[in-house]
Amino acid sequence: MSPLDTWFADERAVGRFRRLWLARRPVTLRARDRGWRRLAPGFDEAVALARSGVPFQIAADQRYDRSGDPGRLDPALASGATVFLPQVHELLPRLARLMVALRHAFFGPFREESSFLFIVEGTGRPGMGLHHDGEVDSFWLQLNGRRTVTIGPPVAPGTPSDLDGQLADHALRARSARESPGPARWWTALLEPGTLLHLPPRTPHRVVCRGRSLAVTLTWGGRTRRRSLRVSSRTRAVALATWPVTSGYVDALPRSSRERVFVQVPAIPGDVDAIGRVWLWTGDGRGVRVPPRPPRVLGSLGRMPSLPREAAGSLLGPLLDAGILGPRDLPLRILADNPSGLDGWRFA
Image 1 (cartoon, rainbow, N blue to C red):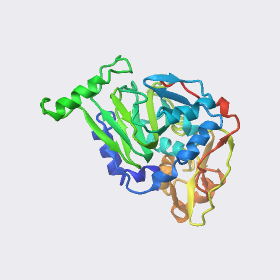
Image 2: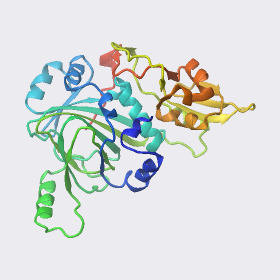
Image 3: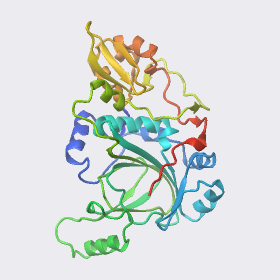
């Protein structure tokens, strides 16, 4: 059971999305189950996370406060400003697991990955206004409440990120009055809880919240550094298995399961050794040699699924011993050893 199963019925659906939508056109995907509810804390817990000393930023009227001053948090929320926590996947292992699964399915290694948790006590105020995020592919997940998002066609490379909001207003009025021939280039969607939205690079968008809203944005930028086509399979596997969760402690452990096992860190199969065992690589560069069967399980470890114990077959013992599998789900959150040292990033 992969984190992607909530939105993609099977591998054919993943392939269809890759061919038709990825980096090409915006699209919304409705949740097939309630798995998204277990990815992140609720609204009040997210506000408490911002109060705990982790980096956060405030956006209002296309102006940004990057101080992370806890004293400014409550007034910002009360005014309807947008509060966001950059790189929040470092603290939320289940969200990091979704990022890893999306990386494995769609983006591959060596790309700059970012996450943002958006907290809004909506008053109808467009905190960031009309803008685009540059050369990044994005997935948005609505967790709590609703957001209205207006989306337009991609802008030209090099276009400033902040855009004139009248551009969207004029386009939507023209569409409403049937003044724009052909298919609509601008559209508005109401994002319900559980909705996954994909935005290709340089897509203009404007978000308005008229009530309480909690949402996540996950982005993939350009490659972090140039790589030759002859990069080793080990190097590629280790990069694909990167696990970007901070060190810290857990305040609540999930219950242990007797029926299922859960992938604890992503692992990517590599070369086969002289006696037929497979090298399995994790993000810290450690290699483990394991039996090659069942191959379907071996190939799925990069998406961090959970699976029945019996499905693991002869891999169960070696993967439990290596810490790649475990009897508990990942914790909901990590309490960081050094919250102020987390990556506050430089969004906008």
